[in-house]
Amino acid sequence: MKLNDKPRQLAVPFASTGDKNNIPDKATQQTKESGNAAYDSGFPPVTMTPISAGGIPPHGKDFNGLMHDITAAIRYVQAGGLYTYNADFAGAIGGYAKDAILAGVSTTAVWLNTIDDNLTDPEGADSAGWVNLLADPLKLFLWQKNNLSDLQNKGTARDNLQVYSQEQTDLKYLAKDQNGSDIP
Image (cartoon, rainbow, N blue to C red):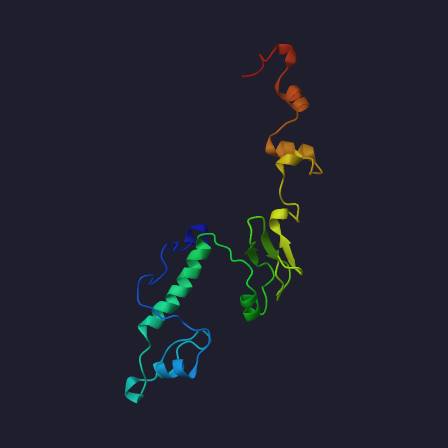
């Protein structure tokens, strides 16, 4: 896949102003008999049976409801949205997967999950398996306040960033005895 293969971003969820049904998580006898879709079973068999044999067509409002739910979730993620921890959702899926990323309740945390099937709340008393990326636990960030003191090889860092110490600047870039006349 190439970077320019990305699909267009969805600014408006499908059927935002259209007629749509709220699709239930679980089918009931009533939804099955009426031909309504549910997330656990999809469309019931009666909607796949020929009308001449007693079947009924699927409901357009169900299609609109399904497509709306899907495209609304896609739009949220495309817009950079991160979900916060949800105990009901975690329970329904058997826990968050390793490498899942969640927003914190406040803006001071972005949580990385380090274990599979994690049911713990990253901001709860038992936050096992969660790491706050904004606290830089993996030491991935350079902090301006540390002035490179958090690095083992400061010289290499300065060279890579093309930032030099006062001594390096004096030696490499300005011959004081020439009063700056060596600068092009």
